[in-house]
Length: 399
Image (cartoon, rainbow, N blue to C red; front, side):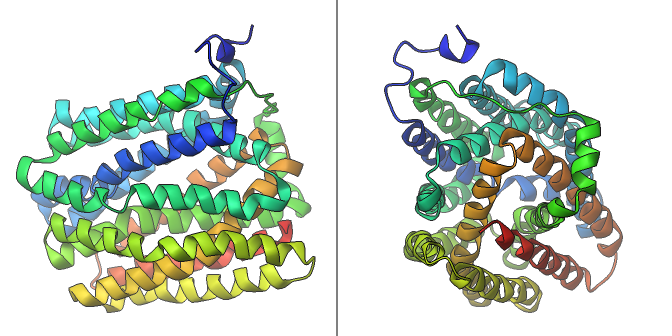
């Protein structure tokens, strides 16, 4: 019996996609409570040491440590995922995420706690995300990928509507330790649906040689560029945008409230984007690609415009508009990503994605290290984010 089938006598009785949906929803509550505030937590430790620039550079250091190691360990982690199975891998990835949020409780607001969080993430990220992407790609139905990606996004955002504002209040009243403890409990609950997931076949036979061959394959260049762009935008939007908002408003409660309002506004468009993508793609023409390119172009402009706003209402307006329009960009992106997984080796493709993604997070982090010293730092940071969006446009080739 495979190791992933030894857990839970009821395994396989519930559809794997539904099990994953529940995991996404419950995990989303936990990560939304804390994920938004992790960059601010790291930034504030550095800021107390030497000001805004030091705070930004500590965040850069965290990303470089995490992503350099992720680039190096992804191939061994794929072999571990193959051995353990997706269900056990997701379970362990979630368990390490709990440990990730417990580190600040034990270490307090210190640099060593930041370094330990980066090290724990090196294990948590590949175990969870390689398995999650492979499951959603393998179990997804080709003609309904838009609906399924839309559902995942909807659940993730729906779980996060109240969590950021609640997280902001908790951290303001009780501190980061209580916030991380609450999030850790929710992530633990997210593991329960995994015991109802069936066993899956893995296809992750990869090596450094095959990775280099994949990088050099002209037919795969659009995938490499897209993953590079995703890494660039992911680093900026996930880590430096929350810090920018916090620096301007000076309140974790306001930061959480703005995020919750933006997610609420985007709920309807996220649902519609998935259905629109499936209908457009079913026509067999360029309808879905054109919508993807158009929305991606608008989102890239909004990325740059972030640096021009300085009021609460300006921040809210840009974030709400970005969240609403980005549904028509990120849902198709997810659809193309999972379509690519069906024809490019599944787990193997997502391993290569993780490696390219990590490599370009390091590249953009190094660039931000130097840009952070200048007064125009935020224009540079958000401008790079826009470039990342442009690089992803070629993924529409997977339509």
